[in-house]
Structure formats: structure tokens, C-alpha cells
Image 1: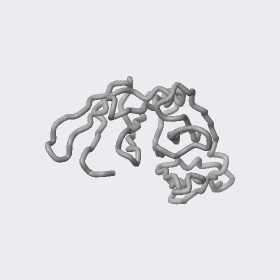
Image 2: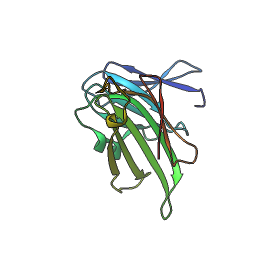
Image 3: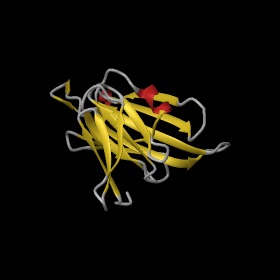
Image 4: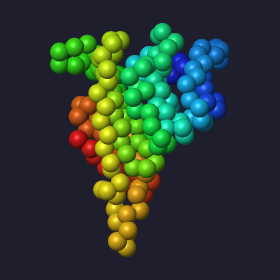
Length: 169
């Protein structure tokens, strides 16, 4: 978001570079199949990667370590889009992290946790293919190809492979 770093999936690794010096800053390993998408946290202090192996990994760029609560989203479904929102202040605790991933089989998976704590993540899953438009009586299962969290953090906006926009609250 600040433009001073960029990341790419290089096979099963996430590599972070300085956009100024072009030096490699981090090399994160946690996937066993190629990475399909990467999302930066708005504060540029962490990023998230998802792969065709069904794994979603969070990476803390300050500590150069994996963010453990995110691993609770891992499964067998391939992720096709990601969105994250970090440093949202919880009602009774410190800053909160949220990451949402959309899978090719039509599920939204969300993890929410208190940042830099030992607290376990709250995980929610939501099947979204049933709301896909039906053509000739058949569910064509539009894939969620782009995700964005509204600034109020109360809604999720999704773009689909059929060119429609969906709003989840």
C-alpha cells in the first residue's frame, strides 16, 4: 500500500522485495503447492498468501514469522481471492486482524483474532454458491474473484466471474 515493497509468489514461496533498492527482504515458505493470490494488510506490516494446496498463510513482516491463527483456515479447497483488514480495534481488547478467503468450490472463510496475542482465532465459513444466478434452471456457481472489506468493516464486497457484484454483511 505504501509502494516501498512488493511481493510475489515464486512457486511455493512468497518473496518480498524493496521497490527502492530491489533487494530481497524476506523469503517465506509455508505452501506445498503454487501460490494463487497474495494480499497486503493495509498497514504494510503483514501479508497473506493462498495456494492451490488449500493453505492460507499469514506473514508478519516485522518479526519475519508466520501468523499462526490464519492457519486455521487451511483446508482442501483452492483459494482464488483474499482480503485482509488489520489493526481494527476490538471492543474489549487490542487490535484485531481479519482475513477472508474465497475458494473455488464456493465458500468464504474468515478468521478473526487479536493481533500479537496467544488468543485463538474465531473462524467462520459461509457457502455462497447457492446465491449464484441460475441460468436455464442450473446453478453456474460464479466464482468470487475479487474481495474488498468496506471501511466500516461491517460488509464484504465481492466481484464474481460472471461480472456481478455481491454484498455480504
